[in-house]
Image (cartoon, rainbow, N blue to C red; front, side, top):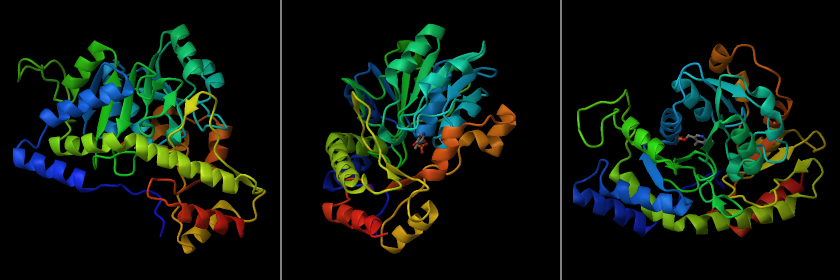
Length: 365
Ligand SMILES: *Cc1c(COP(=O)(O)O)cnc(C)c1O
């Protein structure tokens, strides 16, 4: 079976973990500090604060930006549920904006109509590894004095012009879950240029404790700390990130060359100036295709090709979220995309032979 996702480790990861175990420092320690420094440098931000998941990173980022009960955060319904749960964790209200048909990202032309006196932030997601519309969203945020919290959990190394994901907004959030472009098993990190946000984030992940005076608490916080074992893994993975992404980009290119002429299949697009890192390679199956998406998905599995629908349920329709937002508005693009998308294997372990097989199987239908 060609898996839809597969982490890659070699001797370097194994020896880094063993070295950390032998050092006896296994909770947050020097490796976390080193990982934060290197990750911040990689993204081009002043600070990075590691956490034990991407969800924790998002929650911490919202806290750092002082998003609280009664505040509204404009975001996308077409994402993993963690994006929205983090907003709910802070007691804030997600306000859903429809998405763009080509990138699956928040549609900047529909944001302004969602702004109210309570709006405090925009939370765009670099879905599938394609950054959100940086300039258009940035202009709106500036005009209305809103913060931008970037969910870059799928976009390690993605770029707009010369700027990297994590540096687009006020705060960036990443995940190092097992299926992401690089992994620490579970893990996350926040990136920012804002010293105050960095300070608040460090406090929040450590029970609201002062950095200088232990057992002095500034506010409620959580245990969101990353372990040194995870950071040791992350340091090795980070060195491989650009090469991993190049492999993903190459695989995506081959898939698009093979699939783009098939009637009823729409292959992913990359907007001008953007560097897409293909966390997922996501096609659309329209009514013009010979069989429907569910039939195609099943057929691919029969042929040994892993695949998945990211995401079948747009979140503005999710019952636990409706409890907070009230009756959902119709978001036609997100709802249509949820019916049409299918992600195919694109990760660095997918070989040229695998790609040929995927293309041939789909073409044969
Ligand atoms: C993976 C992911 C998260 C959550 O990260 P975890 O590390 O699994 O907590 C949040 N948002 C998006 C878009 C993701 O893909």
